[in-house]
Length: 61
Image 1 (cartoon, rainbow, N blue to C red):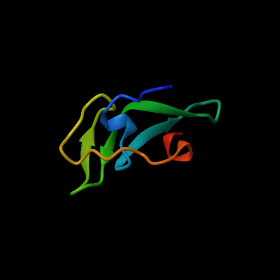
Image 2 (tube, one colour; image 1 turned 90 degrees about the vertical axis):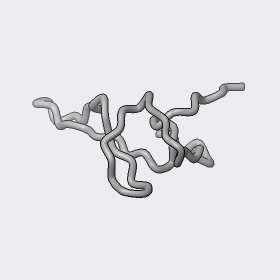
Image 3 (cartoon, one colour; image 1 turned 45 degrees about the vertical axis):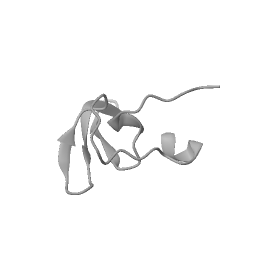
Image 4 (cartoon, rainbow, N blue to C red; image 1 turned 180 degrees about the vertical axis):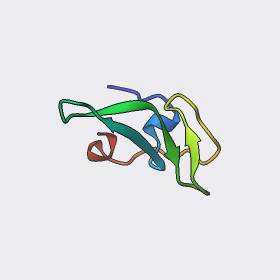
């Protein structure tokens, strides 16, 4: 059984940011944003009081 860490990177409210490489691939940056209660810049390892686990495997991609 895999246990996911409680952090912004595994939260349903977190949106990862990406950059387009010269080769045309999207590469993840080491930050994103949380859209609850308002858009705030966050890093994947942070956690806030609005954390909510993703419900299914498709959300974890």
